[in-house]
Length: 86
Image (tube, rainbow, N blue to C red; front, side, top):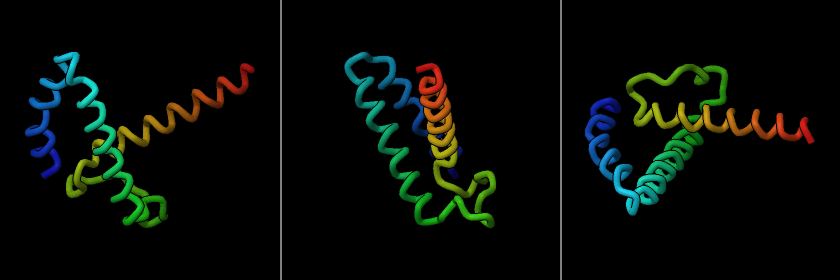
């Protein structure tokens, strides 16, 4: 189901990204989708031992949740490396 929804959204995403005036709207929508994933994650307690496993196809927008986690880890390591360099 999530792959199907992702495939349906892609043309709109590309269209918003192609136009410079609508690029901000695209970024806002991506951020909002990430916020929804965070709220879903809080309800399912994904940090627990029994639920801390890779997202499966039954999870709505699991791809966005994984991207958000990778982005968080990247920013965290970048911040730590900058603090070491100071």
